[in-house]
Image (cartoon, rainbow, N blue to C red; front, top):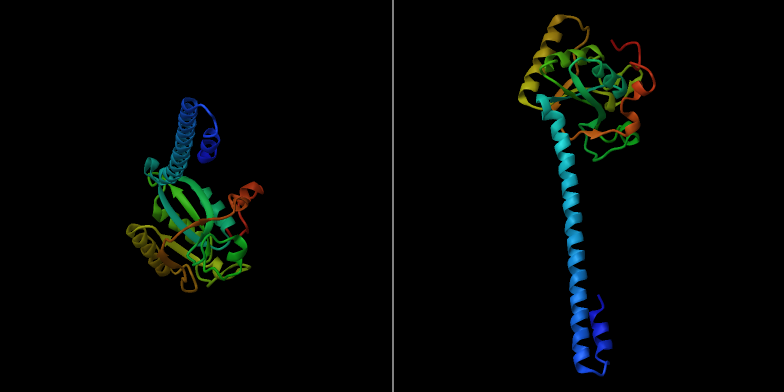
Length: 226
């Protein structure tokens, strides 16, 4: 605020009373400016805090409003997987992303390198009153080959592995029961290699990947998707 500078200038003024008045005015002006700056800073911090709260609340609302729940699956290229789940009645929204690895905030190129440990996955927000988790798991089995290790069709790599990422004990029990049922059905000629593991941080993929096939006017990657 350069108060000392102006105080030194004022001290050169000959009239003592006038000098005192000027000093008081400078100090008062400085106090006003400092208070204004502090208020602005508090407002900025409050705005930032409120914005963060809004983001968190929106994320929370997406899974709580109307008793919505979350499910996460990896079944090869996430474009086709997202398109398949997006057609299921009761599914509120879908997001493609990366999960199950060790690299924070990975890019698509990094995941494709196979060095991040992440799988291409789809996060599904659904209404359990319209579609059950068990039904979503059935869709999962039907849209890919759960017997191939780190591969779906021409897509090869650990990022294309088959996995169910459960969010609670109920989902774990349902996924394991569904897997055993499918194994006993005799529909598959080879053992199921799908991993059923706890859900970890889900990193939303770049925006151009979201609803990619829909943007291209397509409903699936390949004809193998049912």
